[in-house]
Image 1 (cartoon, helix red, strand yellow):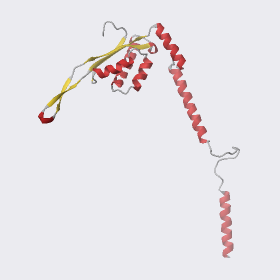
Image 2 (tube, helix red, strand yellow):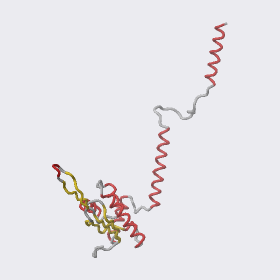
Image 3 (cartoon, rainbow, N blue to C red):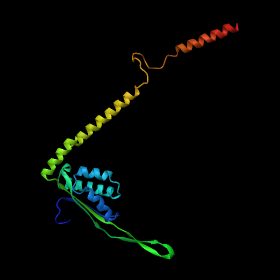
Image 4 (cartoon, rainbow, N blue to C red):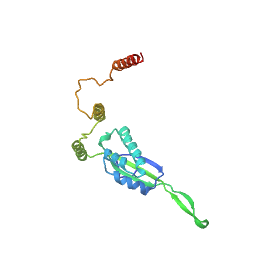
Length: 196
């Protein structure tokens, strides 16, 4: 760990992605709160975003379990990628020649720390304005249950939509089969009378 950086860290060694590609993604999340960093990584289309997301979750777990910090108060205080060992491979070329392929690896480090008090107040105020309000697990579960209930109600209402207007006093069930049986009996009587 670098001596000038404080906080809880997580390190991934020998990641099979080149350091310059990893640094491009790390630059996107540096200084962001944990929720914002997760959102950025979720929608980032670069290949390193998945590995960095896993490493970020590991750093958050380290801070929560080892240093007893609240995950909602954390931010990415520092992150960097150092070069790991480079594997050299050969690619065949024309006229019997060969050229080197350098398969680069990197050592990625993410450091999370508690936000300063002023920044934490600003972050909470911003999330309340957006409607998040520092949502806890219970609030999220309540919102999910409400949305499921609304979807079920919409599905129920969709079943009763019709293209025509009518009163709902009568029954939509299938008609009784008695009139059909009576008409069949009358046809049989008519055919027997005609044959006589």
